[in-house]
Length: 280
Image (cartoon, rainbow, N blue to C red; front, side):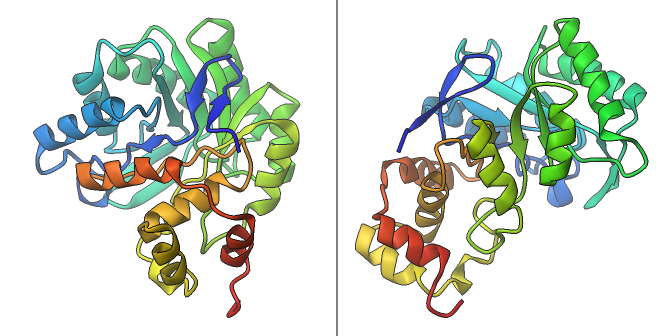
């Protein structure tokens, strides 16, 4: 199992990243209760050797990107910041798609400004807008790429068929779909990414609040002297060398715990047991 991954733009990074959604306020809306704590957390992310931070203009909205710039500029040269556009917010816990090319063009410009970057390493279409062909949405990203505003293009929340349509428009560097021990709906997408060498970034990698229902975990936490979250992340890393989990947290202790998951190499039989528990 490889512990690093080479992105399409030829930057090699550790496979475990950080999802910067939960550094915002309740409902992923507004500033966190303690901004200083969020800034300290982001700095600890880099200190722990994480080199992939995933965010989006919809987180806050705008809050996550602004906090990343506040905490980490000037950015380390080997840090990859990935952001997303194509979702707009009407309030706490409200998420609506907007894949119009004109919206995405503005979104890229605004993300560049908030992140204080001249070029975004990885820009992802946050979701497919059912009212806009994915080819049209990605066309805006391709134009920004040609203008030097983004380096690599990714997609999120797609089916295999939508991934193939995206590939007809541009080189797809990454796919970000929900995938974890409890929800494997997008396993066909993961397998297609593995065939193509495309980075697969599982969001909600820890099945927030749901891991306790997996009856095999207690046995394996004892065997590996690890936490349930660490086992869940180690399982994801064992799925394919293209898998790039992006666990998020607002706690420095949980961050450090998650980073240690990279040191756990599960026995193939345990990977299979987690994938197909006796009760399943």
